[in-house]
Image (cartoon, rainbow, N blue to C red):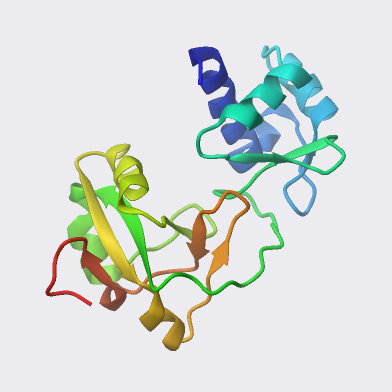
Length: 186
């Protein structure tokens, strides 16, 4: 993505996931915003968005953070919300193992208390170690955790998969975590 599209993507993440009210934007119960309203609200906030720029962000975002409605009139973030929305996710059977990237500074607390969604609705999990590494690197020296999803499912935990392939669950208790590459854990 170009620097301009990256800046727009960060702005969209802020208003579609966390603070729509900061620009007077209204999300519906499922997290959708009208594209024309987003453009109007952004203009009042001093941001010049066009349907073409928004479409370029949606099309080129490497993490596929956003989706358009079938008619293209609405947009929403696929996951990662801190505002109350119902993405209408359906329970899915996860792979036996998923991964979570974090910063080494957080590792001790996570290994005691598990993974929690913090300000978001769910804990985000990746299908591969490289994606988890990239996520963890954003927060400091990265550490990759292996999540024993098969054991979690056997224990009654529920998993969802967002439109862009990110796996979501409410929490991951510490007993289901191991440092990736550590053969002594679960």
